[in-house]
Length: 201
Image (cartoon, rainbow, N blue to C red):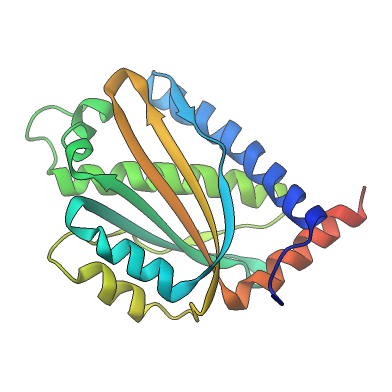
């Protein structure tokens, strides 16, 4: 496949993500004053339609917050924070909010922004880039919201590079999944940045 990363590119991207995850989890743990456990990230080139279908098929059991990101050199994508419904009720305790201080929806958007921007800012710093973000959007208002959102994105999703990261906050029995979607048009740009990093070694 034309967009496939070779072994060196895959290893380099994995290392960049590992470093960003490590720093982001440390910052998050300090912010929450608790331990944050991260699983090994999964990097995969996928069919965009299949990914969309898989997400939409499970829409009834989860809440999704979506936030776009874009930077220099064509780096762009969408970050999806996926929460199981049973974990949504633990957000207030996790963030230290008083009862009724914020709605569950506002709490979800708060923690999603922290998770997304903390990780991506560290990642961007490693590749000497700077990212901007769109406002996070909660996609849990009604059935079909997620499908509509994915079809309205301004990216071509025939092929997408995905990075899946699972956050586990053991003290609160809280889990969520961050899925970074790198659209087809940006994969070559990511590869060019990686090749430049590899050339410096």
